[in-house]
Image (cartoon, rainbow, N blue to C red):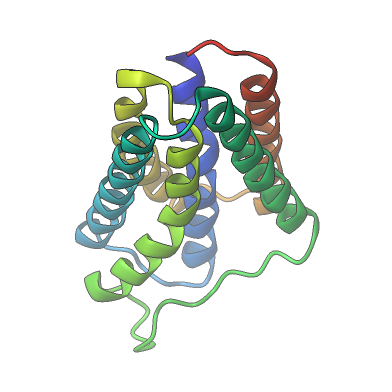
Length: 179
């Protein structure tokens, strides 16, 4: 369960950076939009976990373990690479109102959920514990997005930490067979 919690935190750290980037830019993210973003993340991740668990019946466990490890290592490497490179935040405030409206939050929510969806496939084979992951990613994403609107620090370090955690979790998944 501890690995699932650590994974949820690591894939959600980018929401902290997004919250900070928008706060610095003077763009407000209302509670309704934050809830939509967190809900989308949780629901889409739940679908990924459920789909992965359905595939377990047809794909050997060893292949899922290796595939899941590869997904986590790839996500971590990409996150770490982005943290070391230019740290640009896409602007989802399409109407330039300086308020991220719920419909704009849906697009941002989909984008932020992509890592969680991939990680959801990556933890296939963890059994019922895997179904806690979507709830934890939604919760962590919502909390981090809210904190991000209030706290300012180095975005690269935050994303770098998340990338490092994902890589470590991937290697643990690769070398350990437990669930």
